[in-house]
Length: 230
Image (cartoon, rainbow, N blue to C red; front, side):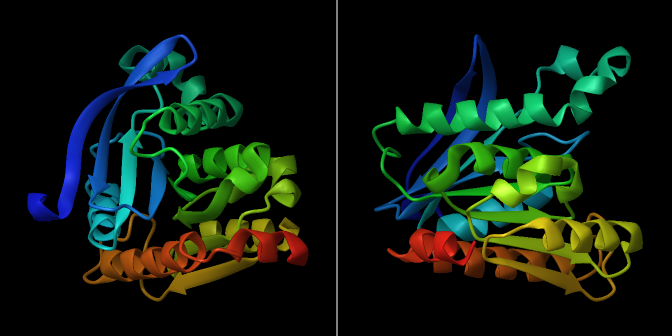
């Protein structure tokens, strides 16, 4: 993406409790919304798939924040439990949202959350806690089932995107979808597997995510309508 289309691109230390985790903030000129990314286990803010989605959103006028949910020491083999500690990961997404509200360029922007793999569960738990503060959620190859009892409490319109050949995850997403009471949709991409490496698969994911965020972050009544349908 051309730097001329961005107001600024910054590396930040995102405050999460007493910790500061590295993140990358891209803010287009006259940004009309913000999407915060929650990556999955074994990934980071440098995920090429999440970066691809973020750059597409930047091109549509949405700011993006990609940040590491865990410190390197928390991801080592003898501490792998933290990678699947959804409550911990969700608390850091909530903290990142609060951090973003203290940034002059971001405060007041409609907010979306984009989660991948276990990060999708963290995003949904965070959305259930933040309530109307979150205007939309998108899950890519996610494990929304790991959000557990938080699922019925999510108010934000939620899109679940799954690869058609990711059979077990498709079933988990279908089950999670049935437990949600907000505006919701499940998109299954034919022929795609878990991380969407197939030709054109990530472009399909990016297009669906962009449409969902633009629809709900740019709609002044989108969140209210979602609550009424719950």
